Image 1 (spheres, helix red, strand yellow):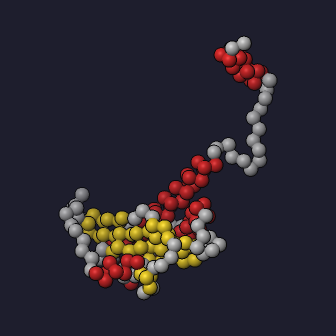
Image 2: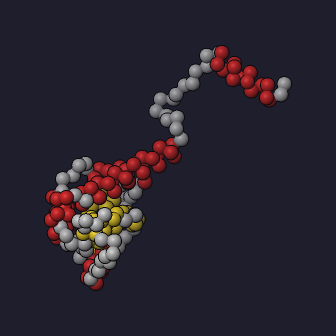
Image 3: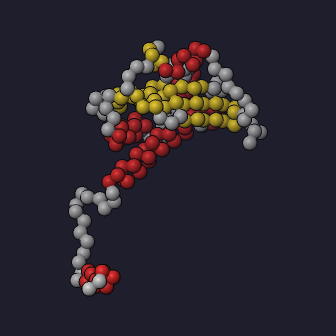
Length: 180
């Protein structure tokens, strides 16, 4: 018997014999690498949205009008727990004070912990560049002073040293009035 005639007979047999698919408890029917990628992407999207929405907020850009380029550093310890989250020294005290006052809509530290668990991060830092530009116009070039550039990779007055992963920057531009 040829394979072309055998295949429909096998299919017919399976339907007629009431053979049921069985799921093994605790096992997913989707390939495991697909679920990890989607969860990872979902968590990173949540992190990026949280940072963006805390800064792109009328209360924030209504009170803080200085362009800022800084690095958000998330440090994981040997156990994979988030040790601390901080901005680099290039973020001035007004920016930090206002950012800390913004209402948090969810616990970003837990989100970073879950992201680190999926990626198996241990004893490493994530570095996320954050650029905030209030009163943005498409024709405007922003100038930064040397001390601002120098302080981008300093945290609490010390140069950053250690293993790190540099992630995609978060750019927050607030359009000037009548500039759309």
